[in-house]
Amino acid sequence: MGQPTSAPRIDFSQLLRAAEGLTQWRPMLLGFLTLVAAGLLMVAGQFLAFRLGGGAGALISAFIALLVVVVVAAGFSGAGVMLMDRAKAIEPRSMVDALLFGLTCLPKFIGFALVLLGLALGLTMVASLVYFVCKLPGIGPLLLFVAHPVLVVLTGVTFTAITWVAVPLFTPAVWDGRSFKESLSLVYAVARTRLIQVVALLLGLYVVMSVIALLLLAALFPGYGLMTGLAAAIVGPGMLGGGMSSIVGILGGMDMGGGGGHLYAGMLATGLIFGVATTLMFQVLIMGVNLVYLSATAGLDIAASQGALETHLEQAKQKAREAQERARMAAERARQAMPQAATAPVAGAVPSPAAKTAVHCPQCHEGIHADDLFCGSCGHKLK
Image (cartoon, rainbow, N blue to C red; front, side, top):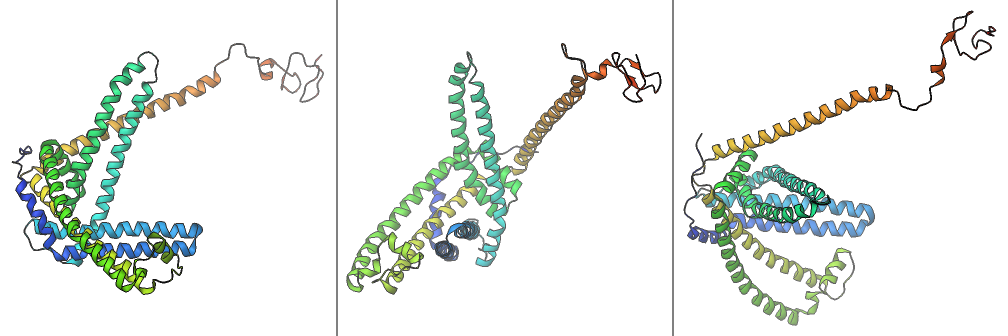
């Protein structure tokens, strides 16, 4: 089994292709429809929460929020799948196929989130154990002086690796059609061999995205401010509503007065404008992440990394089984020691009445005490 190849040269010029996301209308349409659907669901959820109130309202609001997360994740995964096809210079699949594939990606994302949660919990448990040891008198302060900086750096490196490597690589790996285990192996391989390249490319991508976003906003805000002011002067200030109070009033079914249909139209138009702008910026980001993924994994020996990851996981499982066996044996020894401790004589203990029984009744042969005058069973006179 071969070893992972060395990292290729860092090429920032390929990041300019991230702007191609602005020209892909099908993933752009899917992303925009996803935002529209999420917005309508949020409005419906808030309306029902206001109407129902109490526990029922809170329950339906939580359910709608979960549904919004699923819709957004599936929709933008579908857009990411189509942009991955574009980044690989192949024919992008249809919106329906991409959306269905995006739905199948959700279990992998959930599993990855659970892996990251387990990693965070494991790091927290180790740190808690170290800090408990630091409470010991004498050596505790010295251990705290050494351990605290180490734990701070370790936590920072871990969360930096998750933010800069794990999430930006696992997501496009799933869009590329890789399995859950293969995607994890890929992240592990890149983190071991090409960490600097990925961080540098992502920094370059964020610079490109920031420039494009600045250009979009520079073109959008002057036009929005000028036309909104002109429309308010001609149509009437009612189309602008009363800010957040108008939105809350609409969700609660209140009559805001004066705005009428113009208020709804103005709010929907504003949502449409900024929804398109948000979709365009996401297009650039997703396209750029796909390009970084393809560059970071070019020539990478995934099989070798997958074997190394499986070996490490098997070693961790073996250590866990050994620790479980040691705990079971300790519990078994403690259980076996309990009857012995229960039957062992206790120094200074008062003998029980049964211990005083030393003779038997000559008539019925039942046990009697030495100081009894009559047998307690048959009544025979003993003395």
